[in-house]
Image 1 (cartoon, rainbow, N blue to C red):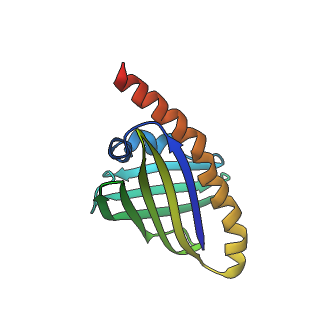
Image 2: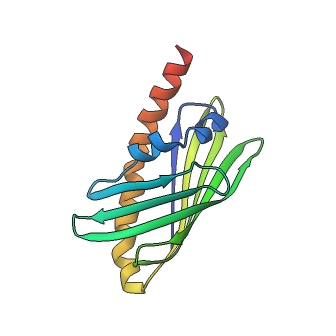
Length: 153
């Protein structure tokens, strides 16, 4: 299954990619999910991010991803995280965090590929994951508008 969302934001594409840090990660936490960040190495190749999730206050799951790729090119930059330990509803997870150059600003592309544990689980999971990433769009816009307004001042 795939989810792909594009969000225009303020800031140079390389600066935007470098701003994918712990503060942004915590700002992006979705509603209805209690996220406990156990480890956050960063967004560079080889880094690990380890979470403990409590969904709707009931379901407890762990999620561990490893950053497996990171590149900066002339018009885009990205890093990729891949699931190493996933919630039981997922068989695989790959999230490409792509930042494209858009004049003086950027477009963040969340390109997610995942395999659910079953077709039924996929039908249940897809809408929630889609909404979770849709939730990020206004957060990205506010976060980068504020971050790069402070930098210009």
